[in-house]
Image (cartoon, rainbow, N blue to C red):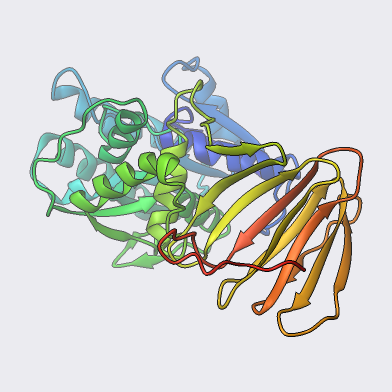
Length: 380
């Protein structure tokens, strides 16, 4: 299958082309699409003469090229209607009635220069479909967000993510404004369904079924919390689909020299203990480093429980029920990664039996509270 993508270097085009390339190269076998595809990328800097050949050979067209920030209003119609007309005329010249998908906008329902130009493009392609018998798909995109979207242009999420990540101010005029948002991966998934003839259609328009309705104030609040999480070690609530997608988007705007951030290491002669992350409902994760011959622990908990995973070195984890004499031993090693549960009511310790540092990942079901530590010293 030969696929023409206009606007291939834009936000949507770049994400679509990357997904198509993964399918073509056999890196993504989850879509059900055959890997025998060829991608024709057309953008503003493409040699115009190539369009003729692409239109002659294409089996499917994703028409994503358009204008939304012109220098003058006339460019709206030229970019959103004029090029669409050229594209369809070229397809028709070659008697190529392959399916054509066009990206429109919810503003096509509004009476403004951009909306009128988008509506003109819609009318053009609907007429083209009736005249030629070609299957046409018109998507009225709401606000889109995700990686590779240009900040300080026409996406509030891209602008907020970029500015907060770079320590720049943002402006929220009315936090109660509700935005209808579609995540780029959800859009690309829908476009791949369209490629297979499985597009979602309602009232002659195609649509993306997953739309998030979120206030501007909530968006700003979440993005600021993402930045603060480096200090608080808090992990966003990934059960919420929008939060999960927005966090992924935010990380894509981090400056190249700011991917890493320091953690507070609690260091003494025995080694170190460093908290990595914490959540409100799933506890915290830390890394413990023990020097050779060192034993740590010798305490028990009423309700607090833990999981220990030794990832480097070797040692032994010992348990004793607080009202019993029997000592239980679990020998652990980075050569055999396994989880050891630390039950309530057992005093326990961990000893490094090796000649190198022993590294243990530790999960606890609750975040440490110095006012209520639930930790009581008792030798194993």
